[in-house]
Amino acid sequence: MQPNDATYPSLRGRAVLITGGAGGIGASLVEHFCAQGARVAFLDIADGPAEALASRIEGAGRPRPHYGHADVTDIGQLRDAIRAAATALGPFHVLVNNAAHDERHRWQDVTPEYWDQRIAINLRHQFFAIQAVAPAMIEAGGGSIVNFGSTSWRLGNGGMPAYTASKAGVEALTRSFARDLGEHRIRVNTVLPGWIMTERQLSLWMTEASEQVRRDGQCLKDRLYPPDIARLVLWLAADDSRMATNQTWCVDGGWI
Image (cartoon, rainbow, N blue to C red):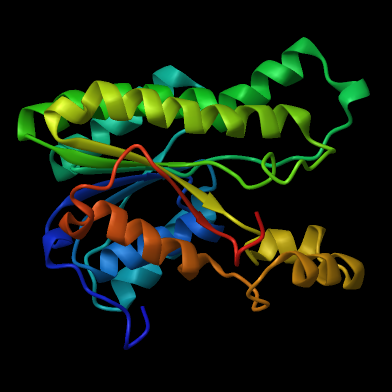
């Protein structure tokens, strides 16, 4: 966190679960929630980066976050990891469904197996993570769920139809759960990150030409970075946003 970043007293001591937390936006989410004094668990398959992240946070004088190895496309493994994390930290008040993979692909090459795998990594696990944590949130009298979508399908991007289709589905999933869980004081929102300058994006996709496309598209010309997303998620998780639900929140510099 930066010195002028907001702090949220309601997050202190709360149990937070983040999927896909070992790198990129997910790692920033873990760091920001830990800096708020939350009790954080995160899931991933990248054991080395995950352990390095947890050690870095602990080295900064904050409680070490709980890391669980989980392939979110394996629902049994996902459920087991969530159960173990809840045993370690207690029932979760906040769930952030961040895990995803924006692998590019040509529509001509997509097989039924590839399609199903893309849906599994980008959409299906969000439903089952919510299913796993919602009963304890209901019992506790409330909670906040943040599902990660994408601006890609709203921009009409090509070159990854299985990804854009799954990410469009996230917004529908959010609206359905917001209605079903609202009576239990559980808020459900979608966050749409714009083009976030993670190491992966910079190494794979950023060129002089694509940088110009980004600048032309955004109203605000600065590059976006993972903390720009993490700060919004903190607010959605905190009591400060207590009546914000069933919404899509976009941080893209004003592109879409």
